[in-house]
Length: 309
Image (cartoon, rainbow, N blue to C red; front, side, top):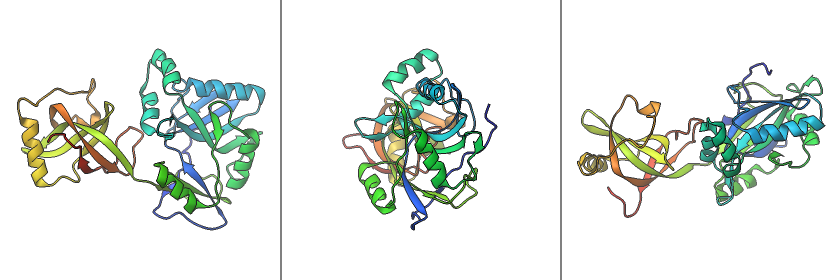
């Protein structure tokens, strides 16, 4: 059993820190996972210390096999990701699909269709020692000693000395961002520090508009989905003319449809909604996808060609 704690998290910044005391890593687009290993026994926890062992059985199996061969108590910090071979990068929506699965049969099938990797970036306990007070450089060294090369779904994230070059690489390939870590810093819980920073690329998505919310007879927002998953509501980027056009389109009796969700998302339960029989597409941007899969601060950039309205 692992005592609850708040994992150390990077602070959002527009400019990465520079200097010899900093190292840079890819920002992995996944779900934070804390792993406890003890002589073949494994426990997995979320960022909020909720149990995740049954959600990621392939990670549990791989970690248990490693632990059985290396009988020491470890506490690992890392990210569970699903790598998209077409996009050649992790895709957050895919790991969210894994998070939402509840039935063992569905989870078992997903280990093939949505296989998860565990990207390690910190070691908090080993050899009977609390490693949190040690500098990050030492914790990372001890981590790579134990995991010198990828083993199945287990791998240690790479470190880079040139943050600017890594940021350029990330932008060109559409990855999530870059994390900067102070080499001399201990592990501090939460965000009460100035030792880890993250710079994130803009999230850009092609979404389907499946409904509109109406307030006082006027269009308030559009309801977004991607691959059938609720992404939130968006209104920023709409002018009054476009709002009126969409409202007319949505309230046409021949266009009205029914909810595409088997369970109405909590964010919509207080809204008056008109569902569209024929959704339309648009491109949106936002800061990030939350762990619930909702796009933060979304803004409409454009509407799909050849789509109404």
